[in-house]
Length: 204
Image (cartoon, rainbow, N blue to C red; front, side, top):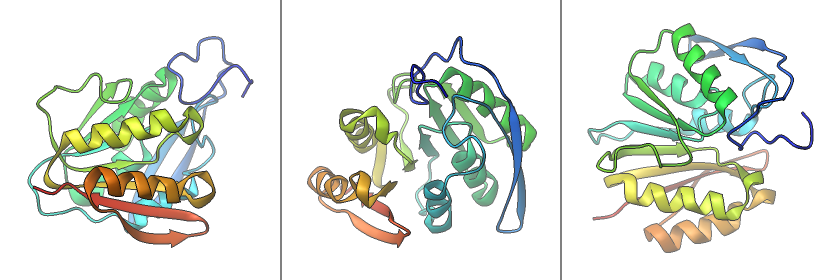
């Protein structure tokens, strides 16, 4: 990918297209994902997302899940299939968003809503979630990552949960500190090859 293109930007126009696909088997379920140049983790699901999928547990709160920064859809699509939950997915990258819609159809996922959205911008202002999951775009900068955390706090139902995967070397300790201040709590659910799974619960 050329230096002028970043997976967290909206417009990938002018970037060469080199489509590919891969199969992903997880908990006795089979998935196929179509990807391309200009999207995050083109060749296979990145290890951080895999660690998040391994550790995520839905809560008992009635309400949909939000996958913020969904990319071509691996987290949200897998969660929707596994837990039969309605999942909303937001993605700013136009190419990734097109692939996301393709992958929803490819994997026959019906209980999903996809948004071509800069963070939470395109969501209905009254829409709230039981869980929000994110593999945040670290390279977009701390301001963007923390905007995801702030938006998640506003968008969670009471006792809803924010799940974050982030590498220790890319700011897990500072994210934990920020989330603790924002939510009043932040638990390290797992550590795996330098990746941390953080969970914060929105209190009443």
